[in-house]
Length: 364
Length: 231
Image (cartoon, rainbow over all chains, first blue to last red; front, side, top):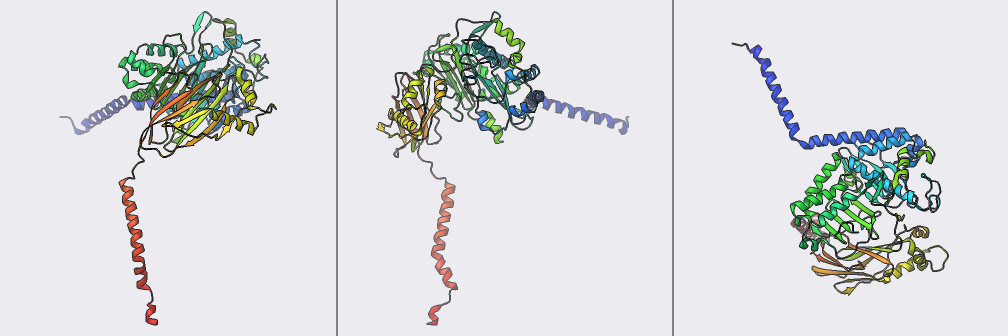
């Protein structure tokens, strides 16, 4: 017979194993904690990248790039228009040294998903196409050109984008990364494990171009997925979704913060499961610009609100035509608007009427 | 700030890109509206009022004509009086009616951009107004909005905003093909009844006040010296 003294360690070991196994099982079973942890890690990586960029600047540069988190004027300082027609503040990318520029690129790559980063860089490449095609051409980076910098006319190109911070990059308190220029506005608010990327404005002109023989369509998937969805609807559904009037522009574009228009079109609850999936995948083109740790919960929220989400369309339904569409739900507004009937010039807007500029985080 | 000359700032990748871009056809380098006058209206319905926001953005090709309409004395400046006169002109071309009864529209707050901004196609004129509604019955109503300002050169947007009041629910929006006309169908719900708890507390308070008023003289009277005995 074994003595109690020899049995005790075995009992303790068994107890320890049970506790450890239970803890492990609980940890695996609670995906929100895992997800939250992952989001915290992502925030930490973005903060580190932001701090590295800030460290690459001198004092004057840091002063120029930094704004208060509650600076309402700076929050709203974004537009589809090029500089200097629209005056942006922050640091112009073209004024950065190669080292600073590399740190800024790393920050964008960390803050956005791979697809989001692709979209942003392709939009900027489109602007480079405009610069090359601009009458009089001219060197990149601010040299006066006919109708260009110094005369108030538009200046195009990859250098004409600006970065700014609202608040101090932090893993705990809210702050915002602003990045934008002609046809681009990214307003990414981070608060601990949460993030919001609304309002944002991905747009493009031209909508199709080639670089080294490769065809580039910065917003091509948005276009193709939308036309696939409208053509997947039956006649009765189309009667509900198609507005009987021309929509000439974005309704809730720049300068329309805080407004919510009455939803129109067909409710997603009236779509088949396959059509709903197509709608969700269309929304992902905007919601997925954020890095996955934040984009995934945002998509989960959009799926939850899907029964109260509407899809509206104006214009022809043949792919390649200039058509406007809108997706609107309790926490979502997306608009896609070809400009003046030109399929090669697209403006879009992405909003969350409940959480633009991370309003929910700031309230906390 | 540590900066480099712009020519140096251009990344090598950017230079390669610039050299290797092959355009698909010719790109119209237009950053903004050209030959259209965008008139965007938003209407907010309350139980007792209708608010109108009208944003007017002239395109580059029409800006000079619009500026000429505003700048009556041709001094190159848009004075407050000229702005007000133009705002009234615009509002004179608007029509607003509820259930067929016209609503008078008066120009409220307005702001005008710098003429240069308009010439670049980026300036927006912002006009605001609020029309008071006569008390309406609970139930279905229709609001008509029609914009007849500058039809030859304009494109229009007209939308209902989500009502702030829970008493108003927009049920449909119908427009003509150009959005010059918008008919908003909406329901006006009854004013919310006061909750039972509020009724109970109010009744208790009323009874208490009434009791104090009635009993007060008696209570006070019991402590008063009886002057009549002095007589």
